[in-house]
Length: 105
Image 1 (cartoon, rainbow, N blue to C red):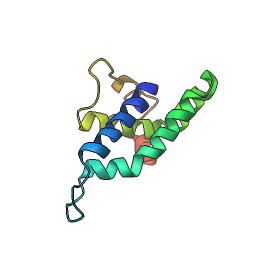
Image 2 (tube, helix red, strand yellow):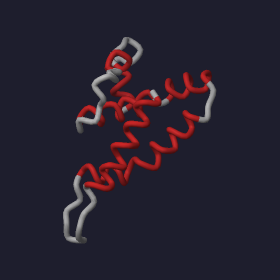
Image 3 (cartoon, rainbow, N blue to C red):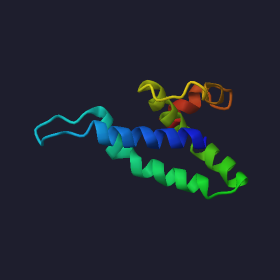
């Protein structure tokens, strides 16, 4: 899951730099807005994950599975999901049912 957080933070930093408006009149791109809304929190989650024990990480993942799913979906939507990293089996497992997805959304 650290891979998802790391890749998501990198993608948001890329968006912040490459999709920033050039003038005040320029309409904000959805990528730039997503970076403004989510980068700091994603970095906070990354630091929390990095500084925790395995037991705390397991609990942390369980409590934040919806957030990880949104990050995974965003990476996939914008084409930043690394081909060697496919976590769909984790998110599509019976642990994460469609009923649970709706309650998290």
